[in-house]
Amino acid sequence: MNQFRNLIFSDPIEFQITRPSSCPYLDGRTEQRLATDLSRHPQKHDVLAKAGFRRVENWVYKPVCKGCQECLPIRVAAGNGKDGALKLSRNQKRVLARNNDLERVILPNFSRDDHYEMFRNYLSSRHADGQMADMDEDSYEAMITSSPIDTVLVEYRAKGRLICAILVDLQQDGLSAVYSFFDPAETHRSPGTFMVLDCAALAYEMGLSYLYLGYYIAASQKMSYKARFSPAEVLVAGRWTQLTI
Image (tube, rainbow, N blue to C red; front, side, top):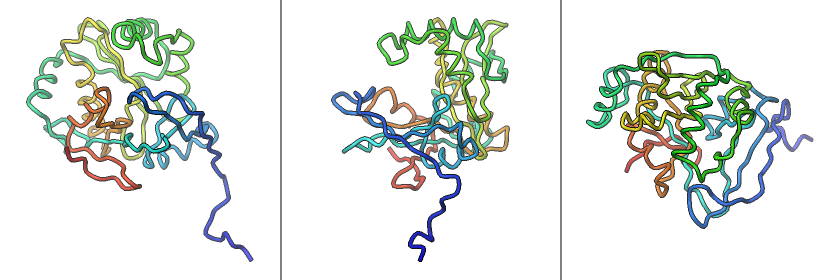
């Protein structure tokens, strides 16, 4: 008798659990991740993304930290305040106005010299003590190009000068913001906020419903900013639920 008739064993996904390491977002916490090599199952990416997994190069992962559930997958509504469901605050409207001179260009996920130079300047200025501070050009190229799914680079220029860029995955129901960086000299533009708003607008233009933003951590200043984009949903106990602050 088959005692496991409710289970499907075809094309199984093999997961690994990483060793415990120091949490990069919450002091005194330990981080562990459940991960799998997506290159073996690229067709499963969208299902995994909806279940809260994030992609890094060929891998997708999800935090499985003992005694901690602070990392909540978050997605915001597509649109730009005029079209779609995303609502803009006064500050976000000012950010869009401040960047109305930028031209958006969607590119294949290739490594480019001017992008890498801006990436290095960004890390030195904003994340000199972070996990990515020691990334060399080969590591950067792997981050940009190693993807078993549809991935693009969205760059923004003002009169031909590169201002900011964001790596974006394409999903059936939305876009997923993988990593963004910008010219530190352009901080006054609030380019991080601008890229989220514009990618939400791009998702709407493509007929998609969401922009996935990774993980929301209320107790982390680096991650709590995502609650500024509304309406947003977080994944709690397997269900996407509206985020309320």
